[in-house]
Length: 302
Ligand code: NAD
Image (cartoon, rainbow, N blue to C red; front, side, top):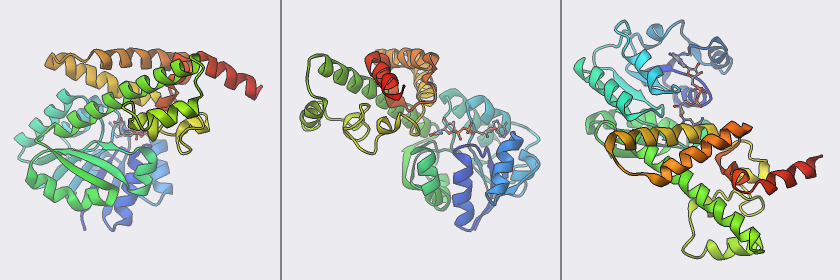
């Protein structure tokens, strides 16, 4: 069993660290927020007084932080006592430039590193069913297997350093764009007088079929497990979708890859978040395209 230094025990990091501890690893946590660290302690995890104390002597260091700036802040700190032979795994969703920077800096020190962003949200983290998309050497990936298996169900070695982040932002751009397309189609179908259930029955067996429609429909009553049936509470917040769409735009600009639909999706999610819906699940974007739904909901609840 490994000694693991875990930095960042927020919404995702806390349940991930618990899965590691439950699997028998010796987990030492740190978070810059005293409240987050307190919650980790209450959940039975061992809290360290600093990032340095958490990683001291650790075989594996895991970071689960908000952005690339936070990851570089922690991992590039020259005073961080990473031991020779330690493996560093960053599970945060971050920009490709910061990802390349931490791989390069740790490589210069002779340390193995992986970018391993996740899909599956807080529920997947608690259940240990996350999907990990991993970038880095095959040797580092092999070493990480046991630890990643304790937190996830699906592991994919996407390729060399940075490939995990590339997969994550491309996937989420696809999810954001397709959720908008499904929302537009449902809004238009309603305007044309089509029954939504009938349209769903037809499109889910026709060329319009996609995950955003058949597993996560933004209109209530079509897919029972979808957040649309719970007032768009839970699920994957619109503000997190906006973050990932912006990361995709940064990467697209740097690589001069045209992503006009990704750019449109980023703009629309920015408006949606500014309208006060940042915390709602990302399928709530249908309320931006068809405001009559929001007005109808408001009438029902008053
Ligand atoms: P969060 O804000 O709940 O947790 C991040 C934690 O990092 C916070 O507790 C914060 O105090 C801590 N932190 C920030 N700077 C720090 C530092 N320098 N040292 C130590 N701790 C520091 O965020 P989250 O929802 O847990 O997401 C974490 C990452 O996972 C993000 O990159 C996010 O995009 C990604 N992600 C989130 C979800 C989700 O559903 N929440 C899903 C997939 C991926």
